[in-house]
Image 1: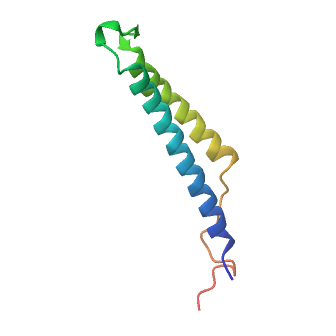
Image 2 (image 1 turned 180 degrees about the horizontal axis):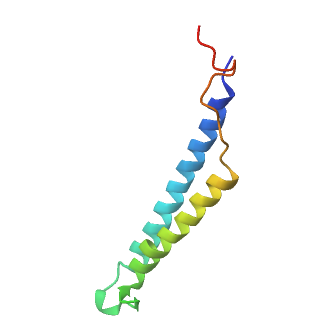
Image 3 (image 1 turned 90 degrees about the vertical axis):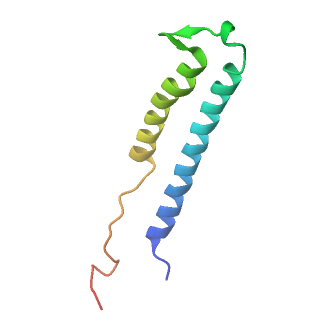
Length: 89
């Protein structure tokens, strides 16, 4: 009989992989989309190039928010003990 905790762990691992992919796509799109031009043409936000601000600063805030929401609403608390009540044989 397969332990139901494995199904939960696999689901949460997939959620983690999706979050990593979102982070990478966000970072790559802004870093290389806005940052691939001539540095003389960059716009600046709070003294940082806009591509860096959006990819690293806003990306970090976005990922903290997404991970927090995922843990709060999508992850489940799973006991570490066996289903039989922790009996050892």
